Figure 1 (cartoon, rainbow, N blue to C red):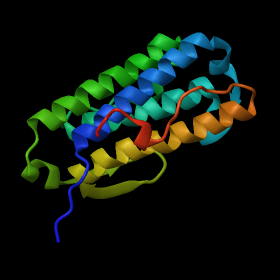
Figure 2: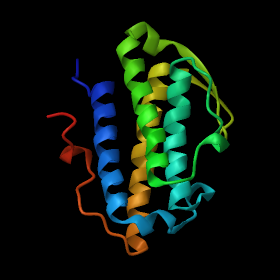
Figure 3: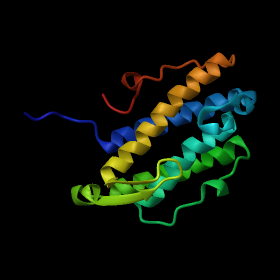
Length: 165
């Protein structure tokens, strides 16, 4: 039996649209970025944002076979600095998809991670991991911020996304 599936491009579009909403929300709620946060030992929301975007960027660089930026080299500065990491990652991921074939996506890759050690899997699996990593952490972010008095005002479920019909 054959099933239609979501494409990697649709997942990427959803990631981009969701992150744009978060960027606008943080711009309208600038004090939230410095709220305390213990997720991934980040210290505050600013550090947690860097974690989300660092994973996107570092894995996007791996997918393209490029040098991987050191985690510590990524800025913890302004909101624009942080979201610029995401913008670079999204560009890389889009480039990767544009250049990839089924064979490329099926290639095995070895990744040395900061927290999980050495992992092996296909380039497709790494791409999907990047998307799921962001989705999971944005859900944590929404809950965390709400418990600190910062409510968001949009639906975050994939079904509400414009990424696919």
